[in-house]
Length: 254
Image (cartoon, rainbow, N blue to C red):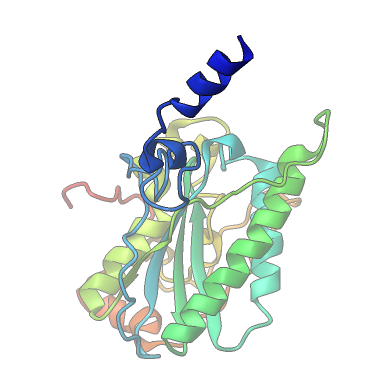
């Protein structure tokens, strides 16, 4: 019996080398779920090289936030963003001139010395805003403090090069709440300008006439910390394209 078993072992068919190696698949190659996720309807700007930026041209920037952050038009979120504008205000090569908070995104008009200053300034603002936003929305909640992503996409930036473009950007950013019908919601319906924006400190509203009067909110209202513009387009150039009314609705026929 023992001899037969020995003989059968000797006659056992050898597996091909390829079949033996199949148990140890080499690393690398295509893997399920590898690579960048597919782009959705609200994907950010494509990763193309940013164009050259001259210091005389302001920039309109749009930042979107993740759904987990919730509605941005809340008092706690407003104060979190205000803290971020305080952090950014110490820079000399990057300045936030105007800002508005909508429910899912933030509009900014900024000035920067060059392309590198724009990139580092926006990075600093996003880091500070994410830190303060996570702290604000975690306050009063059970469990650990939120530390997840706030700005999932690359920000969209449009360089402003003409008076017409500058006027459009100013009206679009500060009157954007009217586009989304936020001006019809209480208690904002009693405001002439958007309290979740820097519109309160804009001196160019046509409704002012010759008076240097700035609308004020309640005694507890704290305006966003923004710079007075240094570029000609934001200081005076936009006026060549016509006055701006606080009642304008962006994207509507004028």
